Image 1 (cartoon, rainbow, N blue to C red):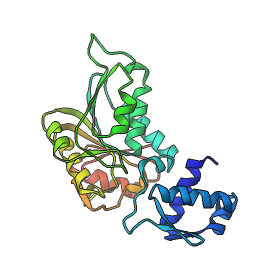
Image 2 (cartoon, helix red, strand yellow; image 1 turned 90 degrees about the vertical axis):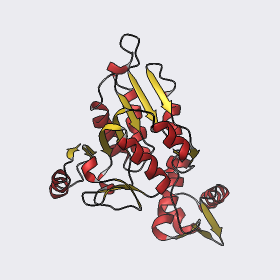
Image 3 (cartoon, one colour; image 1 turned 120 degrees about the horizontal axis):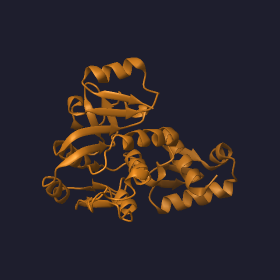
Image 4 (tube, one colour; image 1 turned 180 degrees about the horizontal axis):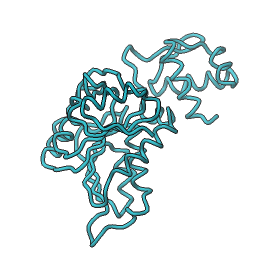
Length: 262
């Protein structure tokens, strides 16, 4: 087990239980107590947890794993979803990508498409507009893509740029397809995220787009989150995994959303 996977597992357990002791954590992960103590110390230095005598507790009451520790959650589902979303994009489109683990996989799937290896007639194969620093960093090395990064204030948990600078750039652009990552998507309550600043940027991206696609694994569906991005009626396509039940899919379809399960 790599260190990052071990750290993610520890943080996941900590979120579930609220407190972890060294010996039970070592037993759960199949490593030595000394390894867990070192892990706790290093995670505490990054302010991801608080060390206690014999263990660790959550860092504060509002806890969110940074993006780099969420990348392997439901990885197989996210990979299938990202490939299906990438297949919806036509060469030459302007694509908007919000931040998140699934949208990061969408960016990688687009970069891997053979038909997008070169532009057409001097034009870029795709123009990608994003407020996510990590996505821009991955795509900027692809000469066939034109990468547009909004300004704004960076959130360390999601690598997303938010605020008036990001909104000012998006307000001047027209996008063919917006691909959203969300914390929750419900047929009645719509698409939402935990943070109002991210929701505001995502909402504007939807407003500037001809088509809105939500890429979300089934654990995010039927779930409400704090800050609304848009109603379900503003979403054209939902791409998710087969964990979404038939009745759940019908509820989204009745709200006017095309559902693709992969």
